[in-house]
Image (cartoon, rainbow, N blue to C red; front, side):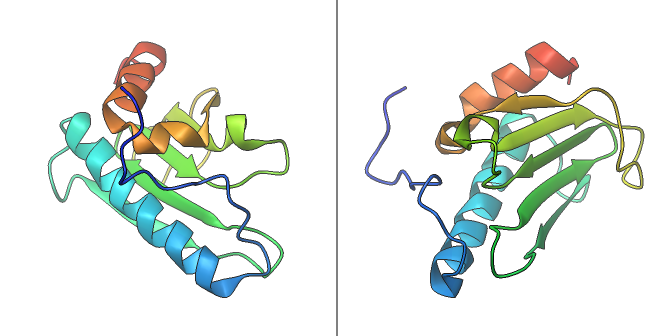
Amino acid sequence: MPRTSRSFDFRKPVAYDDAAKRRFHGRARSQLRQLAAALRLAVGSYDLRSNWGGIAVSGEVILHSDRLYVQASQPVMGHDTGILFRVCKGRKDYIGGPNNFASLDLLNRPEDLAARIRERCDA
C-alpha cells in the first residue's frame, strides 16, 4: 500500500526537540491504536503508554496486551529496527519471547504491520 498524504515521517529525529517528540508520541499512539484494531484487539484488552525518556532520545510508545508487546522508538541502531514486537504472558511480562523488529515506516501501514506480527508471533 503506498504512503498517503496522512503519512507521518517517523524517521525525522525528535531528540532535543520537545515539540517534535510530542508529535512523534501522539502519532505513534494513534497508529498503535490502528494496529490494535487491525489485530482485532478489543478496547480495554491492551494498554497504550508512553515512556518519554530523556532529552537525547525519542522515548518509546508501547502497546501491551496479554499476549503481545509492541514498542515504537527511534533506536540508535537505525529506523529499520524502530518497531520491536514479541509475544508475552500478560501485561506484567516485560521480557516476553524473542524480539522481532520492523521498520518505523510500517507504523503508517498498520494492516501490513499486523500481518508481519501475526506471521512472526502467531498473534
